[in-house]
Every structure is written in structure tokens, then in C-alpha cells.
Length: 305
Image (tube, rainbow, N blue to C red; front, side, top):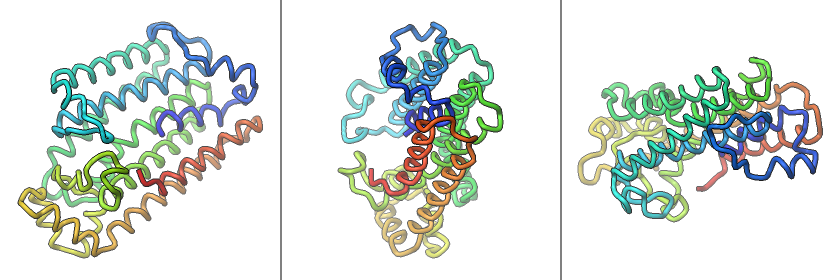
């Protein structure tokens, strides 16, 4: 979703170079230059941001699996399970180092600040999750802020970076950021819903994984307004035997999942609205990419994995 979104944003705001078969064929070839080398072509710079985004994302997954003592990732053994925590941490650090070199080579201070802020946000979000007070644990506003830092910030800032590297004005770059923000928020809200209504086989991870980690997500927070018993379970982080099962049953009795989906759908619609506000498309190809961005936003709320 992340790299697809930012490359579609790049194309949607372009003059339609990728619609030219010859140029497209050339630009779709892998760029094998070292990450320390400056890419002169605008599209190559935007592709480089897509690669940097994925490296940052995978690095956080490697580190998260160590923090969570996870044994699987998407149905497969996690790196820390197979090779140990030290290897998993070093692998994540290596990817962050590679991303930093590639980022510096772009020679764009504003983009450098945006993507460095993403890493700061990811760490801040993890700290918010692990060190929340009892009051914060029950706050939807706190949850939304944490969700932005841990998920939406990466997509928002990478989409904005792609627009800036395309030499677009700040107002246009902000629309790209708005799209990424709302797409990221919708994606995470749906992810939290799937933790309750999905299956282990489709998700590639155990269901109720957040509850088992002591984390209350939007379905629980909304449900607690109808089932006060969830407040006590949340404040003690579902740590007693039977707490996770009880919490899942209580959430199922309420409109917690429905309300969470409504918020996700609202974010998806705002993402589509951001695309609608893009400057007039300069080519048919750019218009097609805008339709793809709209489809991507709407499909996030209907996904099952």
C-alpha cells in the first residue's frame, strides 16, 4: 500500500511521462545504482523514496517482532524466532542505515527532514503504546495520535516527499500528504477491526493479538462506552486468565467494530477528496492514476487481510 500510494501520487501529479510506452519501459527497469549515488531523473528520485519507505517499514517490523516476542509474521516464522533477537535488531538497524544513505543522496533538505521525522514518530508512537497512563489507555484521542505516529506518518510524509521531489508547490504537496494521512489512518483502523473479525489464516497472525499484548484499540474503546466492564479489563491490560476471551465477547456484543469501520470509511472518503482537489490532470495517464488512488482508498475499507 505504501509504495503503491506514493508512486501513484507521483504519476497522478506528473505530466504523464509514464504513459509514454518507451519512457515507461525504461523507468520500469531496476535502478541498480548504489544508494549513495544521486539520481538525476525525477521519477528515479520518487522511486528511491518508495524504496526508502519500504526499508523503514520492514525495519520497524523486525524491531516490533523483538519487542513483542513474536514467533510469526504473515504466517511464517519471524526473523527473531529463526535467528535470534540480536540478528533481528541488527537487520533492522542495517535497513535504517541503508535508508539514511539513500535519503541523504537525494540532496533535498525538506525531504530529508520529512522522512527523518517519520523515524522519530515511529519511536514516539511505540513509547506512547508502552508507557501510557490509565487515563491515556482509555482515550480515543490518544489512540488516534498513536496511530498517526506508528502508521499514518510514514505514508503521509512519503507521499509528500514524492510530490516535493516532483517539484510541486507546497499546497499540492500538502494534498499528497493529506491523502497519505487519511489512507494510513483508514488502513490501521481496518487492521484493528480485522484483529476481531478476521481469521488467523487470512491475517497471517493470531487473532486478538493486540488484546494478548495488552493493547486496547478502537473497537475496544468504542465498545467500552456500552460495556463498562471493558474499562477494568483495559486498565489491567487483559493480563488475567480469561480476560482476552471476555473482552472479545464484550466487543462482539456492542457496536465497537461498526463504529470503528465508520471512522475508517470517513478517512477513506477524505483521502478521495484530497485527490479530487489535485490540480487539473495534465494527461489521460495522470487521470487514470487518480482513479487508481481513489480505488486504493476505497478498497482499504473492504480488505480482509
